[in-house]
Amino acid sequence: MNYFKIIFTTIFIFALFFVAAACGTAPAEPDAGEGTAGEAAPGVQRTIRAGIGLNDQHPQYLGLLKFKELVEERTDGSIVVETYHSGQLGDDRSMMEALQLGTQEVTVPSTAPIAGFVQEFTVFDFPFLFPSNEVADEVLDGEVGQMMLDKLDDQNLVGLAYWENGFRDLTNARRAVASMEDMKGLSIRTMENELHLEAFRALGANPTPMAFTELFTALQQGAVDGQENPVATVYLQGFHEVQDHISNTHHIYSPFVFLMSKTFFDSLTEEEQEIVRDAAREAGQHQRQLNREANAQYLDDLQEEGMTYTEIDEEARQEMIDTVQPVLDKYAERIGQDIVDQVYEAIREAQED
Ligand code: TK8
Image 1 (cartoon, rainbow, N blue to C red):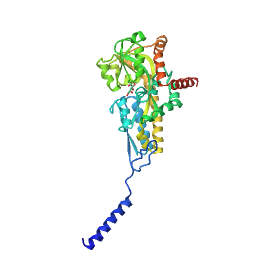
Image 2 (image 1 turned 30 degrees about the vertical axis):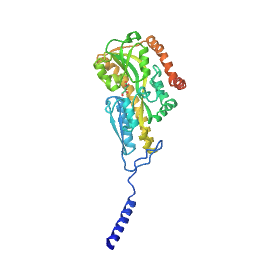
Image 3 (image 1 turned 180 degrees about the vertical axis):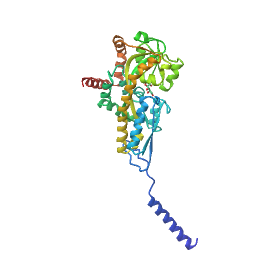
Image 4 (image 1 turned 90 degrees about the horizontal axis):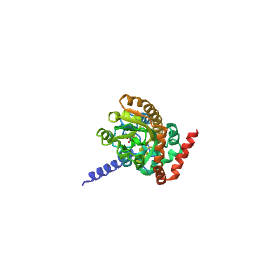
């Protein structure tokens, strides 16, 4: 190689190093460090894939749209929220698993399937636990509610807020249910939660656990006689098309929990973490209000659609309460009597306010 080529090659190599040093490295992906906030990555847009099981008419989805509006506005679009409904991304359990895997960022399931990941959540599905929406709000939004949300961290999940599913009522295609006697032998779909199964078995029904995404077809084909959900869900999901009877059992107040993948949450800056937490809480207040209006409004509509509404009198309700008590005692021992006692104490305090 002649003298000229050696000099040119040396200058070219130095020039390459100089250009590389001047450009620096591409913006780093937000740090997904364990339990630490990420670093702002200027210009990098992140996407939150938020999926639920109910349809786009339900207050749960309207709450998701509110979350989207608040997050995109407060991050100037650096975080965008894609919203999915009607089980488009899967059922409650598979969407929670997707959050753990990092293939989805947000879902808002009922507490019942969450108990399959964190057993202590079973306490929120104790029949006849919460006496009213207002007491539920005060307990869930207080210390006890936060104590339970903190238990999600070990499952790579972050609980940002409680939303509302509401008081669950029994529907079926066979007969009016005014008492436990009428419930005997009815095949009832329950959520995938052991306590629900045992409670309905104790009440004399024949329970079948099933993902919500399969429920309408199962009712339509008569695979099960009935199910239990709040009035808004019964109406908005069109269950009146395949169910003839509804009773105001109000047997469980069902909270929703706004869940985020912990891997994603930890990748956000502290400011972004505060934005998504505040947005989940504010959207939750909006969703609770819409949900209460819907649960109050649609009972008349269900009757106009041909459903027969049957009142459960206080004597029949007390018989149900007494019948399921041994099941609650069993689960209190299993999940920790101290946790159960803290929840009941918080309820007593909320009732005195
Ligand atoms: C929707 C469910 C539903 C719940 C059920 O994904 O499964 O019956 O009440 O709201 O979470």
